Length: 282
Ligand SMILES: Nc1ncnc2c1ncn2[C@@H]1O[C@H](COP(=O)(O)OP(=O)(O)OP(=O)(O)O)[C@@H](O)[C@H]1O
Ligand SMILES: [Mg+2]
Image 1 (cartoon, rainbow, N blue to C red):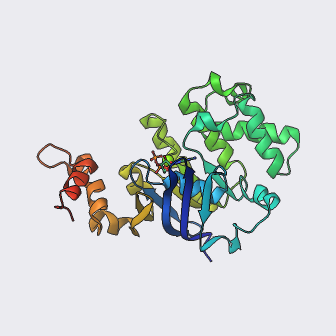
Image 2 (image 1 turned 180 degrees about the vertical axis):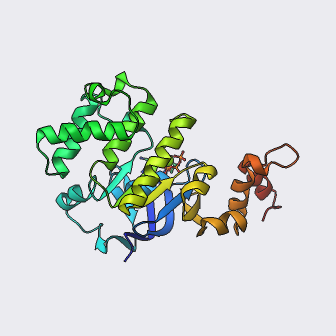
Image 3 (image 1 turned 120 degrees about the horizontal axis):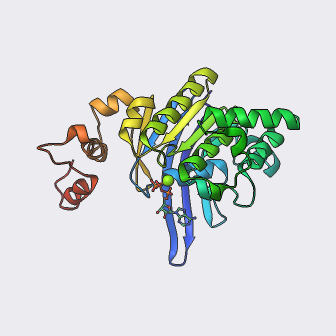
């Protein structure tokens, strides 16, 4: 049984001028122990699709799906209470905007200990110890000291690492990582990716990584979904995708990689779109 199975997910937002379709009939599934990468340009509905799974979209979002199952359970039909138990515990997400995702009114220590209080059966002392252990794991310097800091006292990269610590705190079965390394510099990026992949290998959790970075895809993913304007353009295992991409948009994404630069000039996705508009693509 797949860990997560989604069929024909559509998300529309009610706008002043009518409905806007951000996700248009996307289907995907992830097995335990598998790493699925979702790539695609900005605005292609990657985050919205995953926030729909988490039940975290605003009320203006109209979500429909033929199937949305977690371990065979219909997550569209569960009660708010059951959802609260599932989200943050069995399904956790590293949000794309770490600073905005943390509560500015509480210390980061309070926030991570709160996650541990709600979902894990730990006393106050054990929660504190686990929080320090997690901050250590994600490479935050002076973890014990750090617990007393508010989000505004930390850099974007540090907030991102707090988010990551919170997401992995309760041993999720499925971790959705939305651009988990974007705000980090290269050395920390590698450290965080190694951490995520290590955890994934160790715990057998399923991992969905949303990224713009085809290098990250190559390094982490078993399978890849390429999304464009809310639609799934292509899905393939990672080797097939890099070696024999079927879709013109996927080829454009790959040709935008520095190592594929032709004559010293990168073909960009905008070049591709310009070509497509002129009817000369594919
Ligand atoms: N709450 C909202 N109300 C209206 N439109 C929204 C809302 N949230 C997202 N959108 C729109 O939905 C589309 C998809 O957004 P989404 O954040 O999923 O893109 P993305 O693929 O994650 O992009 P990026 O790579 O920049 O993170 C965008 O056009 C965005 O403006
Ligand atoms: Mg996004």
